Image 1 (cartoon, rainbow, N blue to C red):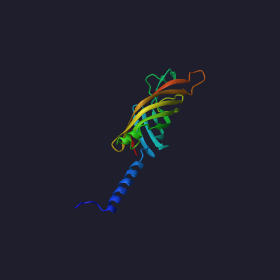
Image 2: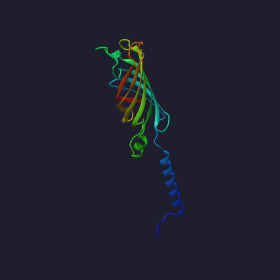
Image 3: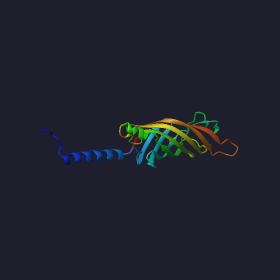
Image 4: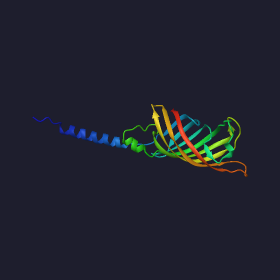
Length: 190
């Protein structure tokens, strides 16, 4: 005597399997819709928000206080031993280019945990300093970095980039400089 499932149960199991397969494929890897948090690193303290633009691109905006990046040939920022920390406003499109591969391998991608390429557009507000007054500047720095989660609410970012800085100084001073950015931050996601 053969012990087969009745025909209706076979089709039910087959239909359920197909629906589960489509449901699994429908959950495509994507950046989060919106992430807010704070981060601190060796160069400063920041509050940020990342908004989804597409499945792999997020637009990050942040404000904080940051020591200036390393620049080459910029005499404006040689203040001896006196530290100065300007207000920083940053807009940064981020392309999380390996988020789909991480998802396919079963690795965590929550809170946009992946490797990213970004174009940092940074405004240093020299008029608002913790110590001293400096001219403002703007920096455009392509950056390659990684972002990983530490538990559910903490994250870690590490990377760097090299770009261009333009200082808003008087006409007789040089204004264009090379700028290097080091990303080494730990943060809390709300």
